[in-house]
Image (cartoon, rainbow, N blue to C red):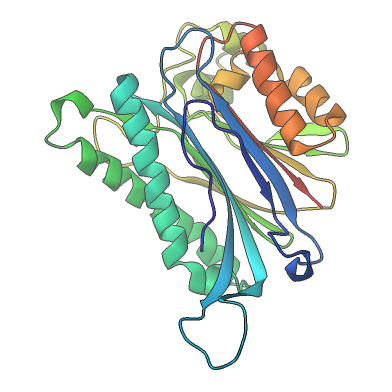
Amino acid sequence: MIESAPSSQVRPSPQNGAAANPALAPAHTLESFGASDQGRVRTSNEDQFVTATLMRALWIEQSSVQQAQMHYGDDRGHVLIVADGMGGAQGGETASAVAVGAIEQFLLNALRWLLTLHGSEEAEVLRDFKVALRTADASVCAAAAGHPGLSGMGTTLTMAYNLGTDLFVAHVGDSRCYLYRGGALQQLTRDHTLVGELVEKGLIQPEDAGAHPYRHVITNVVGGPKAGLHAEVHRLTLEPGDLLLLCTDGLTGMVADEQIASVLRGATTPRAASEELIRLANEQGGKDNVTAVVARYL
């Protein structure tokens, strides 16, 4: 089953990876919190986010034995998603919501193997997450078909999934996934933008990217004018104390990496970090919707 936050204009969502019964908690878990804000300029919020726990569950319909109605297995995966919609208020919000819904449905259907990863199955996760993003792409394009007001709508989508120490990241667009470890902040994903490509080719310097006039031109999205995308995927091993940050460009366009690292370093909880990052983005301009999901591996 997936437990996730409802969507609203200002959307805080606490999650404890240990779930309701601490006796069921694995030795290591992920504690997370996500929040989203429309910012100081935009009149609507086209961002979406999810923090969720994926688990085995048994629903008791009838039994002659007196027992709880729900039983949960020990294996649990944790899912974090951010999506930043494009295409006007209605189109952007619809695109990001459709894409997130498609990913959630994929995770439910993949439950059988997502909670039992061994050896070569880890490579299958990366391969199937690419399929999941292509499915989300098709879903957004289908939703736009026949609706002139939604034509060309698209969204970024960045997802992190962990089971134990295994972390898998799937990504399209210019939202980001960061890893904070040992005092250092590392951007795990690439920015799928025209400026990002220019930086990779050495045609402009990284420090000049933030002021470039084409910095918001995205070259790879879920949906958009035509179907098709390039899914970026990664796998790495988590260590106790690691922090993950998934965020939209409403944060990274306003708050420098050095400030992000400082917030993650000083925050006592994922909630405190997420809320402080959003506060900083608004304090320093708030020109876009801003979403931040912070998770700590314990």
